[in-house]
Length: 387
Image 1 (tube, rainbow, N blue to C red):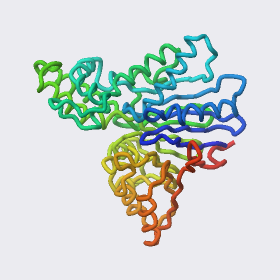
Image 2 (image 1 turned 30 degrees about the vertical axis):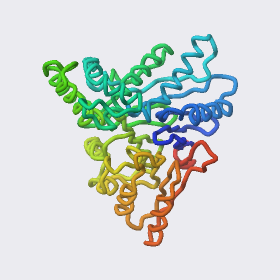
Image 3 (image 1 turned 90 degrees about the horizontal axis):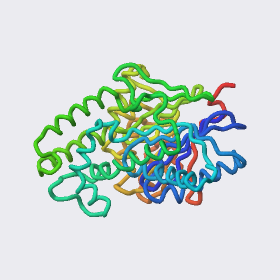
Image 4 (image 1 turned 135 degrees about the vertical axis):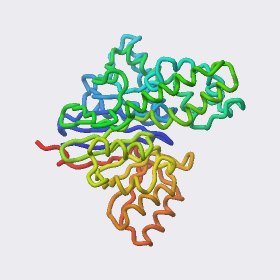
């Protein structure tokens, strides 16, 4: 049986395809679409290949289209994909893909319906980010904060397109795709696949909404300089770290942990509260590194607590990702263990680091995407599902 993660060339972002089910009737889930340009260069041609090989005479079924995170380097390609489908529908063309459901937590889901006030407060920052300029001097936002703010409308457009296409939204959740603070939320998707949702945590999002309501009470939020600063800090310190959908995908005895841009401590806490860890540890077959291998999202303890046979990194060196310090954390946590690190793009600095690691006696392997190919594959084997 089939259980494979395909990581597309997504530049500094994420665009993943999850293949599962019987080899003669494979199923597909699309997770993220990368930043601008990735849909046209990678995702669209790869989906076309899959349609031609799997369903040349009928729409190709996509069990789920997931936006794991609000930032542009995840949602941009998803929106471009749906824009394509909406255009075909408007032209009365047959749609080439049959998407069953979309998972997408919009900004409204995260901070509540009053998020329109936040959009007004951050309008200058959003305009500056979209034009490629620095954020307005009276709105002291980080790059990540302005990127998230700029993605607010993209998330809404994804939802609007899904409505136009009559796609299920966040099924079977009633609103936000989230997990309870205690226990776990497991969704059976059919054909032997199930998702355990590990983030965001519903109670933390509710607290976030309460905090935002307090911010709204500040006098002159939408126009006052201080109000804009408060809104900026709110985005930087809270929303950006809480918005990722994190899932543990399981097929038979095989498990993949797909982390989006989540924080490592949040993932560990969710694992513990879900009862998935034994003696503070869990082993998965595949771990997709959070936030493209940034060291701001993980610590060595994360890699000691959550070990894997395969580590997948989607990055191209932009913003320093994957960071050498993150790779050092994995190396330190795993010692002389055997495992494989898979990277979507090759860099000289990575080659230098891994060569030094080999001289130290490290036993892990490194695999890069072939630059002539659209993606790299990590196949968990024909025994992933039981007949």
